[in-house]
View (cartoon, rainbow, N blue to C red):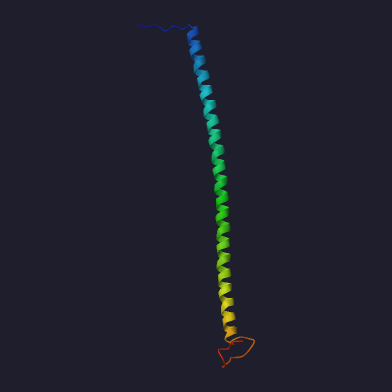
Length: 100
C-alpha cells in the first residue's frame, strides 16, 4: 500500500509556481487578443454604419433623379403642347402646325 507523504518539497512548489505563471501569461495573452478582436469588430461595425448611411443617401438621390425625370417629362409635354398652339398663350390654331 502507498502512503501519503504530507511534506511539501521544493519541486512541488516550483511546479505549482510554473503552472500559475503559465496560466497568468496565457490569460493575459488571450485577454489581449480578445481586446484586439473587440477593437477590430468595432471598426467593422463603424464601416458598416457608414455603408448604411451611404445606401440611404443613394436611395434619396435615386428618388430625386426619378422626380426630376418626371418633372422634365411634364415640362417637355408642356413645351410640345405650346409648340402646337395648345397652351395658355394662344388658343387652338388651325394654321401651319401651330409653329411660332
